[in-house]
Every structure is written in C-alpha cells, then in structure tokens.
Image (tube, rainbow, N blue to C red; front, side):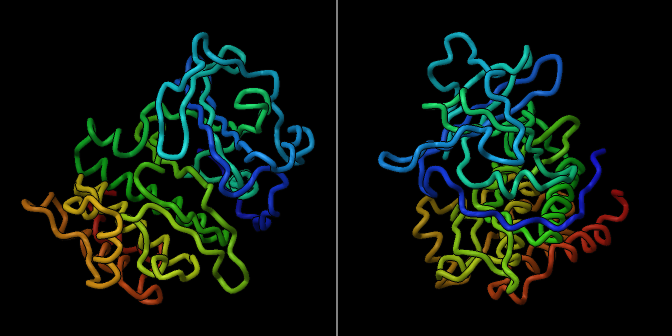
Length: 319
C-alpha cells in the first residue's frame, strides 16, 4: 500500500499557459506488461500565450519523446464529457493520456491509496505539442462501469468507504475536490477506488473556502446554484449523491432529464433522491448517513471524517 504523505500542500499559482476554459483532450490506454499510464494536455485558445516546454515547468517529470501514438489512432477511441480518449504507448507499455488545464499543481502533491497518482508530463503527444499529464490507467473503468458486473452490497460498501477515505485525505490537506461524482471514481485492481479529475479542485484559503466552482448538476450542492463559494460541505453533499448512486444503482433524480429542472427542484423544493422501491439490501443502515450529508445548509452537514465513523458503526459486521 502506498505511503500517505501528510505534509502541507502548497496553494497552486495561476498557470502560465492556456486559459481556464481552454478545450481539453484526454487519452486513455489499456495496460500491458507493466503499469499503465495516462496523460492530459491543455490546449490554449487562439490568441493566448504560447505553451511552455515541459522542462520549463518545475517539479514535473518530463516524459516528452517517450510516448507514441498507437498505429491508426488519429481519431479518439472514446469521447468523454470533457475529453477525448486516444491510445498510445510508453516504452512498450500501453498508456492513457488525459487532458487537463490547471489541476497539476494540486494533483502532483497528493499521495493516498484512494487518489489516482500523478506520474509525469509530456509535451509531444497531444495537440500542437500541448502539455499532457500521465497517470495510471485503471482497466476496470469508472465506478458505474465496474458496478454493472459487480452488484453485491459488499462491493458497493467497499467503494463508498474508499471514496470517503480519499475525500477525507483531501479535506485533511485543505483541498476540495469540487466535482465528485461516480464517473470521477476509477476502479483499480481488485475493486480499489481512486478519486480522479482534479480540474475543479482547489486548495482552500485560510477562511476555508475557494473560488466558485460548479460540477455536475445531479451531484452539486444547493449553495453552489446560488453562487456561494465552494467549501468542504459541498464535497460532502456530492459524496452523498455519489454514494446514493453506488449503493442503489440509481442516478440521483433519474426521473428528471433536464438539469435546469433538477436545479430548480433542489433550490425551490429542497428535493432529494427518494428511497428506491423495492429498497436495496441494508439501505436502512446507510440512508441516515445520506440524509446527514445532503442537508440543505452547509453548516448542518456532517464532516467526511464523521461519515467514516458512522460507516464503521453502521456496518461493523462487514469490516
């Protein structure tokens, strides 16, 4: 198991390349004989400053020149919500590359068994030589993909605990994820969950809040719809929605297709997901934890540390 680095994190400087709304390109590749890797590159908008060489970005492992595209992979193998996925190779190892803009300064400082590791950076794999980040590739895919073939409650509980542990590590280091949802949880070997996609993540100010951010509507805390600043309680709310989906197999507000209607239902009617019928096994143990996490007022929500304590208490026989 990886060692956990508890040293303080350094607030990220504003990046010197691209722009916060620059388009992203993501590459993901299956692994082969040794660990797989993923990279991310950010492409600056027309008229923005030139992208620096990787060697000009201190603290990153420069892998330029060591990654090549898979033959015939001029087009993406998969299109994601914020990125396209391509196949490539790193010294005979299949890799995956993911396009990110400003997450490197947070991501590179994280070290926890439930956080996707950041391995290095290249500048010759993506579009127009834009920087790309490399991380391990998870063959099992995202949490929703994994749960299609692993439906038992023990697996679901293990994933929820792992996500809570990863989020607790972030919060202990004054980092908010900002976009926690099932598709941002990758499943490594033996069903081990890893939090990923730190493009929305920020290191908190001394007041405990960071700049306004928005994530996926179905998982987003009510206060963020009203323009309030992002803090740890917003992550806790997103955790409850994510855990609801993991435990029940149902997407939050699955009966509503329009994001605007979802937002209005949450703001005006304080809507929350309903207990599925028939209820899934053991839901009576975990439902009170959901309710404690998705309270309307941020100050009323329990901390992620308290979530872990309640999970251990409610499911002691599963430990």
